[in-house]
Length: 223
Image 1: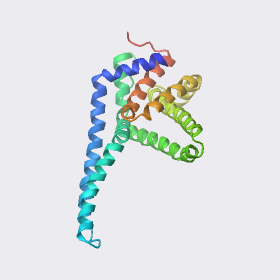
Image 2: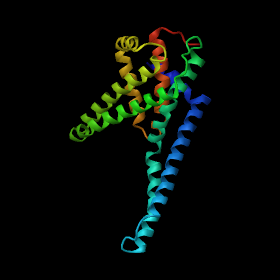
Image 3: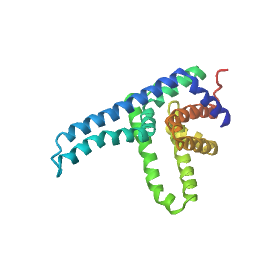
Image 4: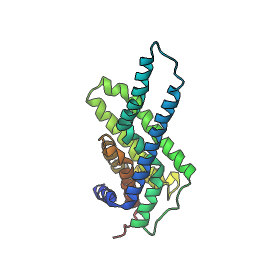
């Protein structure tokens, strides 16, 4: 796992990493800009709420609140947009480090479905864990980390492995390497919890699991 993590960290200096990061950030900026424009448009239909001053305050506060929301939610939203480019990143890593084992790129529809499924599973699991984390301070957070580690490990490993194998073969390979996949998923989950680092966690997770898959499959990396 540590060798794969080391190679994954080297991706930070790869131009392909920067390109995907910029795409995710631009999509995030476009989303929040559209929300601000939509908010301003809807406010134009707002009736007088007792006093024109109240309406003026709402019109000033709404874009400010959206900007604040963009600062707080920007990194996780950008991380979600980054899910759309994970197959593209996996292909780049394989072309660079495993030139004899490059899988054909997935269609946009398949990538979108995988990204939505991925985001839905993680969001659903964390919503279920909220009462546990509040009810069992400390232990709840550890349980949440372990559950997210298992889930992220499984999903990122499948993302890398399904480029080359059928699902039944992926399941067998994953079960043979379940411990290291879980540990790697926990590392990704930890990265996802750190503000700022959570922005690049999906890209790091993809790189880590691509290397881990090829190591598990016995593929030799390019020196």
